[in-house]
Image 1 (spheres, rainbow, N blue to C red):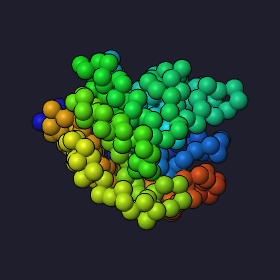
Image 2: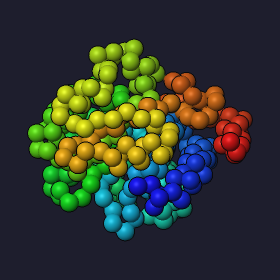
Image 3: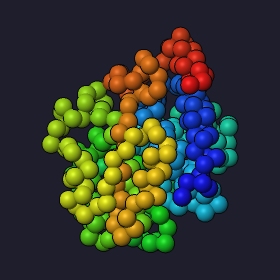
Length: 265
């Protein structure tokens, strides 16, 4: 099953390190970044955009956790869809890329930012074109929104088996752990299973496990992958440190992070 993906899987770490370095470079120009949650979903996004979705046969993708948009922009730039000049002007007064994705920009299927709406939009995409797969990435924090669970029920009722949802389960919402502030959310996988979804859990930083989980999903149900991730991964001084949801690194922190990403392991 994985033979045709072997090369892309082996190159994933290089791509993900490249994306993280690019985001760190941008962090030295603007402070409007959410580095912690962006770094936790890098392998997830790489799997979707650079392995599962073909550039010339694009399926639908919705970044429900809109504060992670910079990662989507960097990947679209890597694929040649967003220009270097456009990316360089991210979050600048003369630029077109904002802190949250907007549908007016190339490669963006939906405007998001207000948490809890992405899954419902994904349902609409999946219902309108059942021949295309719809991928949607959620944060675990937005599972607190009632609209997410309304959408989950509708998606199951409509048997939208062309919808793949990946939850970036880094167990942080802004400045505190989701499992402590909202323990009733857990276990996440069993809740979606009770709603009629095919559900799996995997290491969200292991590209092979992410891919395997998605490829082996049941084809008669919507699919939920709870990807267990680490906020700020893999930077030693960012991992599971809440403040990196908001702040950008200083020059010294930037150089240290770049050095860590450059070490071959």
